[in-house]
Length: 330
Image (cartoon, rainbow, N blue to C red; front, side, top):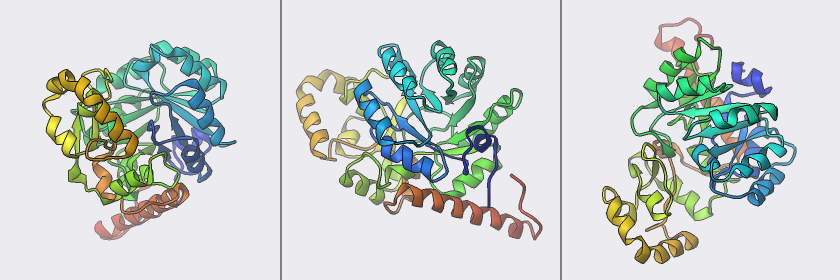
């Protein structure tokens, strides 16, 4: 089944799927592979510098890709946005902060402005800033996000708000297989953002050991917490936490983050060694609640094909459950 939406029309892509710009996961190889498969890939800038960003753009080759930033960090590293815009990305994705100071520069560079939001207030602010695309992110999502709204209820509310402007809305959080894509389209989204499934792709920047850890995990194994940010000495705004895989270190300090911050000087060396050595008793992986649906490691193109096949099957079941008739037009 072909899916034609505002998203596919805006970017001239075949499929209404977008790779989440996950720092440390979504590099140039993965972003390029997703775009080559007919979806839209994004590089995650994360906490890196201009040299690393240039390297990842080069690895994407001639693929049409975008780049995503942690918005509040741009105030400390504005030149990173300048470096990205010189690479002519098709879109710039801003998350976790006010997009307004950067919106005009992004539009002047010819890129579409994608803004991820976690509540209705954020959606209204993003629209006022001139967002070309909104991403409604539920708390199910892996990595950083809000603590309150789930995708299933937030998405249609954002869709209704954005309908007044014609700005397309994407679903993020919990979309791991084609059933999630079908549900997102049914709720009014013009496409879906997929992160956790691509963490276990062959092109992911994660180590083989980390990817195997993801495949072995279940949805009950994640928690939204501040522990990993405190351990890395990152000063994230309090409204955002990171969803990670639980381990002994996370369970020990979850709910005791202030004490962890006080003891960080004595723990820092051991933590850095664990991260560098892939010791997942302390180090962990940012991943969403949908990790229980990730059963294998595949090439990015294979993941895209599987998602679309699963979405077709999910939508085909609807007429049978209604007693016959055609599936709803999307």
